[in-house]
Length: 307
Image (spheres, rainbow, N blue to C red):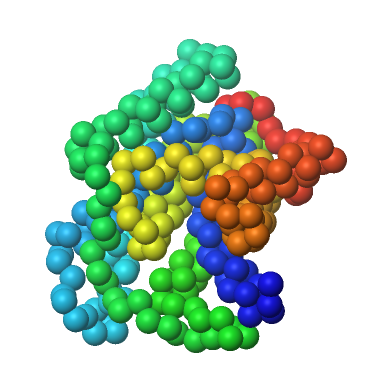
């Protein structure tokens, strides 16, 4: 590979890794608080893609939008994805997981429920929106913005990376610098003591799910701007993002960011060197190698008990 080819692949890997990092945040937030592997989060991601399509379809972007109009359409799509993703995540917590917590169900029951909820949601989406891919309405002309060492960066790639970075910084700030984040960290560390100190466990868990759902929903919209939206779109990105959360250290927000970027870059180089058939093999090989020497992940540490 030439140096120019390396930069081309690296840019693609960073874009892909940014998406994985945003999705992985949802997994790691819920696990940090509940020690629950919320496999239905992949359908929250899928719902965000449809949320963006619905919002943009309602307002019908102009055929040749100006720069300001394009920015407003992108913001509208992000809000649509965030809203539907947050609503689906809230519904999952309220309708599926909270009754199990109140009955002190085992973790195996939570896991089975998460898998069942995932199958239900993606089949519901297939019934509601059809079984064929839906293109994202055109919001802007996807032209070159600038070059990095000869590698072209277009509008969609820049949008994905900038939006992902802003969201990751926002979540990191919320978790580490706000009252809501203090509640999340307290419940993750010891829910019983947090409850005795006046923390509303149900409220903290709901807010955690919604925060993760908003992140997943926006990631779904961003994914749709680059490809298409369909009812099965959450499966492979969701599994890879879960692997990213484990790689970085599940329960650790910054670890999820690092894991997502790492797997995105590894996946891009795997495709370049070995072909698309090996797309996920390289990323999961890296995951296995890291966990062999550091089972908690790169930045992982033991987190609190279930709430």
